[in-house]
Amino acid sequence: MNSLIAVGAGIAVLGALGAGIGIGIATGKAVEAVARQPEADGKIMKNLILGCALAEATAIYGFVIAIMIIMFLK
Image 1 (spheres, one colour):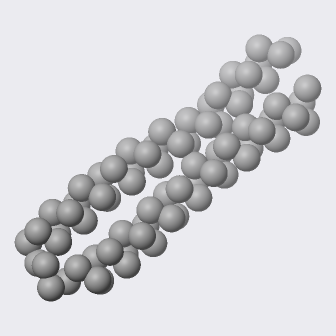
Image 2 (image 1 turned 90 degrees about the vertical axis):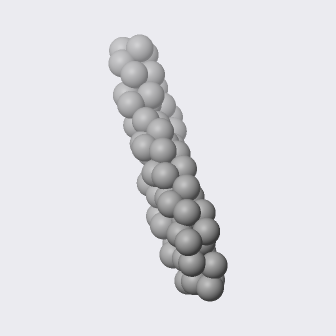
């Protein structure tokens, strides 16, 4: 039973993988956009920070669910 709990927690944390990839792609695209239109720097960065925060929240939710799986199903 303990091995299934560990597998479930590992799967729950996989959301961090998607968040990391998403943040990396978004950052790359934001840098390209600023390079093309430097005058739109403030607007691009505002949207980038908002998107990164939402993606990071997804990773944090997965981490919290993994901790809950480990603590409550033990």
